[in-house]
Length: 331
Image 1 (cartoon, rainbow, N blue to C red):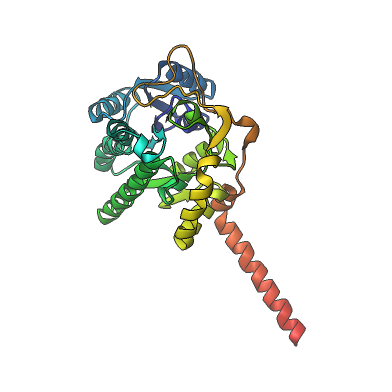
Image 2: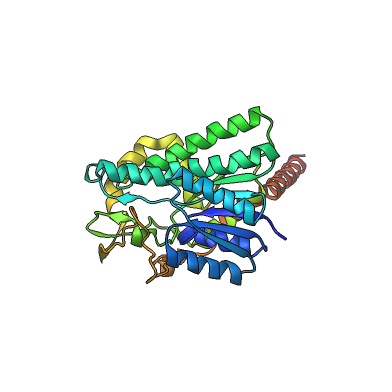
């Protein structure tokens, strides 16, 4: 009958693709989002993929709404097996061009939305000693970049929250698992609907991945939650590692390149979903953004991450063979 899965931010982008990925396994997928057109589209996609959908109009920044949604999900679908926190909003602008109310709102959704979702899931999973919570993060959980102070701050906060919660569950010897998936630049509608004060249309910093790459990694993480986090895409791995050893150099590099690399040559025309959904009844944005012709549908790093035991064994065997060869040669 499949698992009971909750996906926040399911009306578009990575959340939409993730809901469909779970649906392909026959899961029952609860779709939490605000936009009516996006939710309707997500229901259609999940049903066509072979899953069962439960759409719920929820603002994840409101803990009461999230709690009510969790109650309804378990009433209609049964105990929640997986909860994936994906929903976010943000502002593209230099810090001083973001007013306090905007900064708070984006933080309430992008950070506290994860806290609210985690609380609703964990309060049900922990007494049963079963379940998995997946926090969808970003390379920007480790490395802040210009023009995205709201988003980077929230992702850093989620990272710290995740680490703390994981330690508590280990202390309690709980079988509830939490894991985090750090994403690269992804071709999602966020670049057409996040509030922007940039002179040009915002874009993800290349290389860009399709949302299905992220979705497949999220589903894999939900099935293999023993690892504390997963890195998706070579750029994510390189960014995190480089920031660990050369943060100061990255500061200077991003100061020179970060403004231009996050903008196209097109005028800035945004739907702005900060205070309300961008996907009203007149438009369903779907999972993909406007950068399909520049995005890739595969990640060799993800494949290597999933098969690291095989790669390690192969490398060890190759090293042993090379050692034996050189030993014989010297003899």
